Length: 91
Image (cartoon, rainbow, N blue to C red; front, side, top):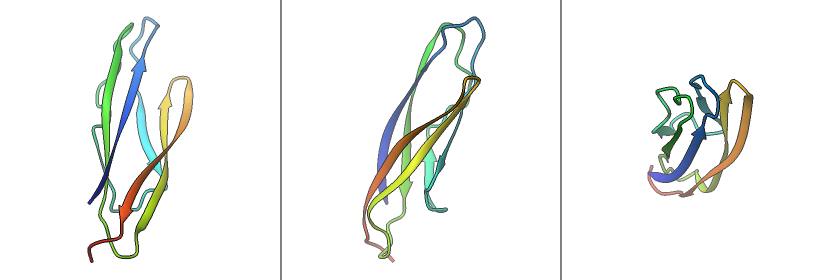
């Protein structure tokens, strides 16, 4: 399994909590994502999450697997690039 770690940091400066919805675009269907936010960010607080992307390695999947993080918040959607390096092992 190829694995990459990403840091997501969110801060609220307002008086209301903020809920984030995080998803990806461009990952294979068998990819696993762990560490996604499950609780709103409290008003005036900062939260950090370590997001882990795991992709099973297969012979046809070798090299850099690029994808996009999409973070939806009350301000709108923000997009960030991500990648996982696979070696093409396995069956």
